[in-house]
Image 1 (tube, rainbow over the protein chains, first blue to last red):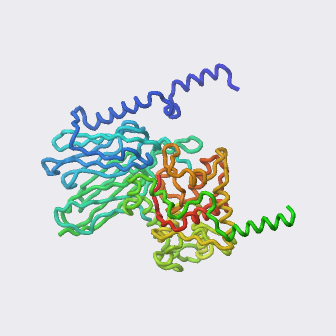
Image 2: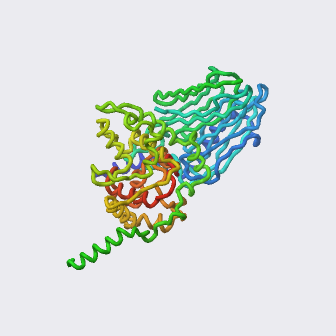
Image 3: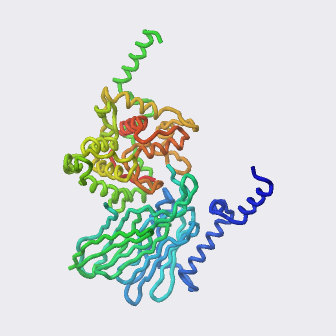
Length: 157
Length: 106
Length: 262
């Protein structure tokens, strides 16, 4: 049987040390994930400006299951030695982690792009950033509605 | 056992852009799921996919847990010369799978 | 029950046995629609493209296992059955099928294990194990595009009836019968997801929710858990009877293994 003192200590401890269980109930979750996204975006572009355009990010607007969402990125570029896409980064704003993937490529790719399948935890905005050989950054974003989310639903059965 | 399926043309014209589709068997355990009794299942994912063409890297992807299980990666490369395309997936817990495919370029 | 009543009951039952009624709610063949038609365009594309369908990975594993010697008999499936593309053609489309040794229908996985034990003198493969799923996927792949063809005779009739009864029985804390959703409310929605007619045309299949390949029994156990009903262990007669009924109910529909489903 817990004494009143033990109970208070336990309660204080659980308040002070947020565990993963508490994170699932965190009322600031959306804000925290947005902040994580901003930080990840900062790591990708440094302080550089990100322009919209040249990048085409394709996702189905409404998906069957967040565990596997087809995603493709295509970037307009001549893909020559002088003018090509060096990297393509895909980020999400509401997944537990903002980074999805980074593609490293060059003129030998012929076309700058990727097609894959990703996990989405929530209805959210997905962002694709292209890093060009001249040091500029371009982006596109897409909104997706997710009713069956990845990462959080167990799929026990 | 089939770990990966790679699809690309067996031959191409020099300079032609060819499409390559790769599919690899991997659970891509995110590290966010829990067992029935509440323990976290540790992360176990493919971290990097690399395509080399006659030993030169032409395409590389860094993967995070948000990549779906049994990852599909489809991309393009220019058919520059006859030779071998090599595809490698490397990940946690010593995971490493390599598939090779020949290509004839005229 | 008096003798007279019992005779009447038997007569009525017998009449029902031979008439092969489409019981209340069973979907006529022209209206049968595969779960494929309820999916998004993208998920359908995933199924249609072998080079991108994750089920292909299991089918290829199954092909390798088919040729691998196993057990005390040191025999591969191919040693008896040759090229699966010929010998296994249309086989999965008629399973579950009656097994005289067991005196009841068995499903494909059980049939594979019967060969493992009897023919290869090997240990049976665990239900839902990677190897058993791979072999089942490989064998069922040889029926792709072919119509489901379950024939019912005097031996299998009681098991079909048992499966049918289970399909129409209310069960679980939610007190729902399979038929209520899958006969009466298909094309409606449950928590945002389409309710299908529940035809097992593509098993074993790659389910996005599982992020892996699984059997119809895994799906049925999931449905029962969803109803908060008593579930059954893998290989249980209740599950095989229900599978028999569901396959019979889908007669004429094309096999799609390995399908992809949300």
